[in-house]
Each structure stands twice: as structure tokens, then as C-alpha cells.
Length: 118
Image (cartoon, rainbow, N blue to C red; front, side, top):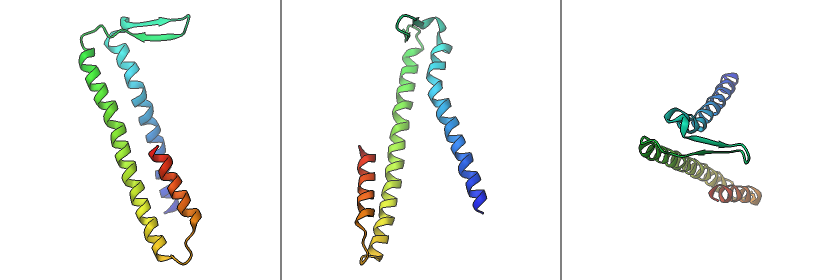
């Protein structure tokens, strides 16, 4: 059973890496697919600039901005709910063992929550 769980987590890690790679490369590929002559490259300063002169960019800007605005929002909501679930579980465990309450665990949870919310 333990090897199957490890195998799944390794495979999940590779799926997440592939998904991030595909999502991060979709916008530059879309720039080249829409209008490859719309890209200007300055080799003096190594800058690649897009001019957005094609008419389809009016629609693609809306689509890309909604997608790129929605994915981080979903990520924040999911991670916040998982963090609250973890904190509630820690609160129940702390209530059971109130006599041996450890300040180090409390400070670790508070620092993790603070850093995450920043």
C-alpha cells in the first residue's frame, strides 16, 4: 500500500509540472500563432515586444485576462480552505492534550499562516 501511495504522488508531481509548463507556454505560443509578424525583437537590449495589431487580440486579451485572473483566485480559495481545515484539525488536537500544550507548534502554525497570507 505504501509503494502505491508513493507512486501516485510521484506521478501527480509530474502531472503538475507538465500542466504548469503547458500553461506558462500557451501565451507566447498564442502570440506567434496569431500574427508572427507582430513580434519585434531588439537584439541590442534583448527585448521581445508584441504590438497587438491583429483584430483577434481584442478577444484574446479578454480571454487571457479572465483565465489568468481566475486561476490564481481559485488557487487562493483552495489553499485557504485547506489551511483552515488543517488549523481546525490542529485545534482539536490541542484541545485533547491541553496539559502538554506546546508553544512551538502554535508559533509554527501562526508563522505559516502569516507567511501564506502575505
